[in-house]
Amino acid sequence: MEEQRPVVIQGAMEVETQHIIEQMTEVREEPFGPFRCVRGLYEGRPLVISETQWGMANASALAALAIARYKPKAVISQGTAGAHDPSLDVYDIVLGARTANSSAWQSHYRAAGSGVDYRGLKKLGVFAWDERKQAFTQEVYHFGDAALLAAARQAAASYRHGRVVEGTITTCDSWNCEVDRIAFLREFYGSLAEEMEGDAVAQICQSFAVPFLAVRIISNSILRNQDPWDLGTGPACQDFVLALLRAYWQQDSGTGL
Image 1 (cartoon, rainbow, N blue to C red):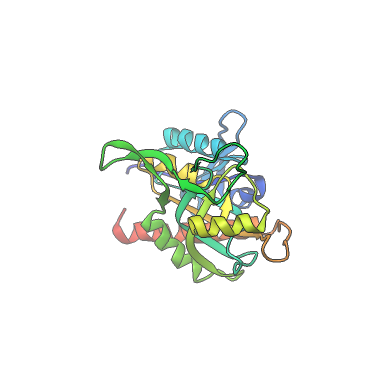
Image 2: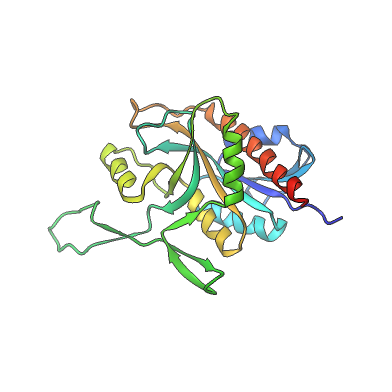
C-alpha cells in the first residue's frame, strides 16, 4: 500500500503549534536548521507541524522546504490574527477563501513636497506559477482549496467559541494599529483580518500545485476597544484545525483514497 502523504500545518509560534503536537503520537523532531519541525500521527494519519516564526520570508521558505521533503497532500497556515472587520470578536475564526499580500502595491506619482497619500495605491500582487498558462503570473489574490474549505465548513458546525466566517485574509510584514489604515485595508482588499504568513505560503503552494488553506482566529481587535492579544486563541484555533482535518480525511474515505 502506498504510504499516505502528510498534511503540513504551519504556525508562527509555539502557542500556535504546541497544542496539536501534544495530540500526536509517534512524534519525531525533524528540524530545518534552527526552525522546529515535528512529524507524527494524528488519529493514525501523518501530520507535519512547522513552527515558522513570524514573517512572510520565514513561512514561505519553510513551506518550500516542507514541500520538497514531505510531498504533502496539503498545507494549512493557521494561527492568530488581528481583526479588520469591526463585527469580528476575539475567538471568531476566518477561513481564507482568498488571501492577498497587502504590502504588494505601487503608489501613484506625487512630486516632492506633495506629501504622502497612503490611499492612492494600485494593487500589484505577487508572482506564482500558473499551470494552465505555463508561466509565472502576477496575481493579487490566491484562493483557498475547495476541498479544504468544504472540510472547514463542516468543522464550523461544532465550533463553540465564536463565529466562523469566510473571506479575505491579508498578509504583510507589518502590524497595523491605526484605525483609519485598517479601514482602508478593509475597503481596498476586502480584508477581514491580517497576519504575517498566509499569502506568502499560498504563493509557494500555488507554484508547486499543493492544496492550501489559511485559517486564522481573531486574537485581538484594535477596532473593539483595543482588545489585548488573547493567548487562549492559539489552542482554540488548533482544535478547530484538527476538526477540519478529520472532516478532510473523511472526504478521502468517501472517495476511497
